[in-house]
Amino acid sequence: MPQPESVLSHISLGTNDYPRAKAFYDAVLATLGIRCLMEHGPSAGYGKGFPDFWIGLPHDGGRAAVGNGTHVCFVANSQEEVQAFHAKALQLGAHDDGGPGIRPEYSPRYYAAFVHDPDGHKIEAVYLLPQGTQ
Image 1 (cartoon, rainbow, N blue to C red):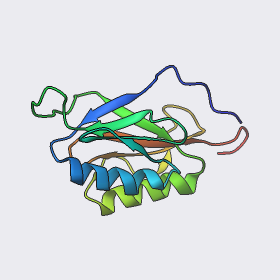
Image 2 (spheres, rainbow, N blue to C red; image 1 turned 180 degrees about the vertical axis):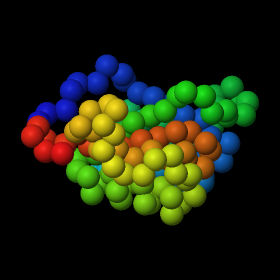
Image 3 (tube, one colour; image 1 turned 180 degrees about the horizontal axis):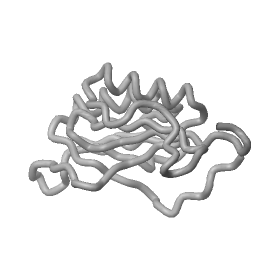
Image 4 (tube, rainbow, N blue to C red; image 1 turned 90 degrees about the vertical axis):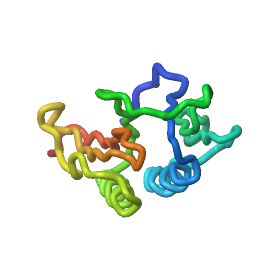
């Protein structure tokens, strides 16, 4: 089942500890086949072919802050990738916000896991189960 086309070019999350954030995202996003494609100053762009997710120090030199109600969801290619994403994130200091499993409130096919990264940003990995499976 093809994934829908994105309506976004890229998303950036701020950090107050760039080396820690880069190490965290290098390892956690690798579980989903996502890698750092480029660095620009104290920021890193991740993706599969285009850097559509960025982490870095705020451009204005101020402190990064977490947005209440904001979260970023990454597409996984399997339930195992969702599980690996969650396990690696917790191993690297993330806080659990919902372990791997079906989220029937969204869809009987919505298999996801949620964590807060070491800066406090809420991130998620989701895999949509094929039609006819639950």
